[in-house]
Amino acid sequence: MRSPGNYLLLFFIAMLVILFIHIQIFSLVLSKLGLSPDSAALLLITTLIGSAINLPLVKVRAEAPPEPPPELPRYWPFKLPPFTGYTVIAINVGGAMVPILFSLYLFLSQPLPLSTVLLAIGIVTIISYGFSRPVAGLGIGMPIFIAPLTAAVVALLLAPEHSPPLAYICGTLGVLIGADLLRLKDIPKLGAPIASIGGAGTFDGIFFTGIIAVLLA
Image (cartoon, rainbow, N blue to C red; front, side, top):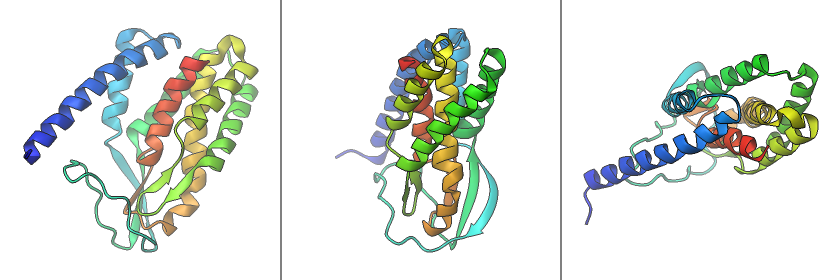
């Protein structure tokens, strides 16, 4: 029988392996965006560390969850706080602030027309909103491959010569707007103790959308 310490050790070893794989893939992705391997690794590490940081914005009164939230593994080191009748709306550093800033950098450094960027973001936003769903007790979730496939196709159609940066911009911002910002109205009904813009269920959507969309574009 394994002790809790053994489970934690296995968890952190797995995290190190995943981090190494992510760095290799992320380096390949960002090389298509003109970044060096060192810059790619730095951006990845900043994103992953920032994913654990939620900056509170406002606290709103919320309803009790209609059903118990999905149970996390017994020895999972990160636990949700109990629901107290309020939901804290926060912004996630790694899942929202970093992608926004990097998208702004790409837009300013690439010859992409503003109208093309806005159209691409709008299309991915609509798709992300349509496929995202409220999850009682947790927040908003969505299928992980819908947005990156949409972003890659849109980028290839609208700007084939600059598809990688456009895919990243419209993919990450489209998910952030469609699956997070436009879903804020649903948050008070979920009974979640904290709802993080760019965090929880949508972090994977935003993070992997950027990676997969650029690889496909």
